[in-house]
Length: 271
Image 1 (tube, rainbow, N blue to C red):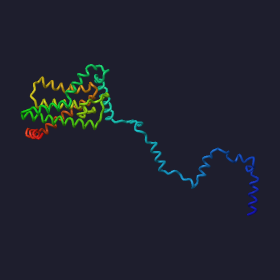
Image 2 (spheres, helix red, strand yellow):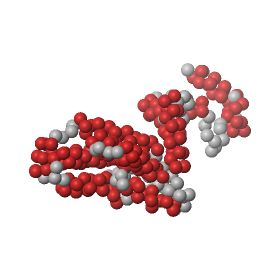
Image 3 (tube, rainbow, N blue to C red):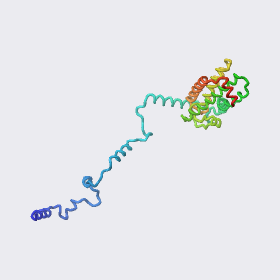
Image 4 (cartoon, rainbow, N blue to C red):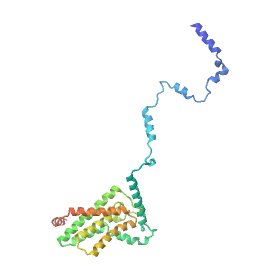
């Protein structure tokens, strides 16, 4: 053992790199970071690697892009058709909104166009129906007026419910009037004036004996009410068309649940 130790000491003394002038070559300079290999060697069992769950979580977060940054590279045919029809609807509705503001091309006719729209409002129709019902003295007239009042109330509830569900805005930033807030006709889809005009015109055509000119004027009035809502920038074209369709189905529903004369008399007496 002493002989081997003496040989090892002699070998260290004979090593050139152990001399003082060569020590700087075998040791890294001060202030420089250690190489990766030495750092990897130094990390023994005491250095714990980061858990795999954190790495996978960071990787998933980096892969999740915001929704607005994602682009659908292969849209479906239905999506393309729907977006195209929606763009055409908005473009045509804005072009027909000739009375939407004071700077519009037909701004001078805005008051008259709004007056046409008021003729299809729910408040005048409900108030007028109740007044006629009070003044009516015939059983047939009371029956028709009671069913008309039911149809008007059904129209207001249906339009208000669908508008609250869809919440579509009009083509122009127009604030609803006080009468619109009373009938809960705040949003654009569907057009409440158009549905009411279609339902009332169909109701009168079915239950009133009218001459041919009056029947034509009644249909034209319903169309003018729907067009006036587009001209003042309150609704889109599809809103008005949907309102016409909803008004027709409301009329069919009232026809199915038509109240008889006895039921109407019972309700009038209770009221």
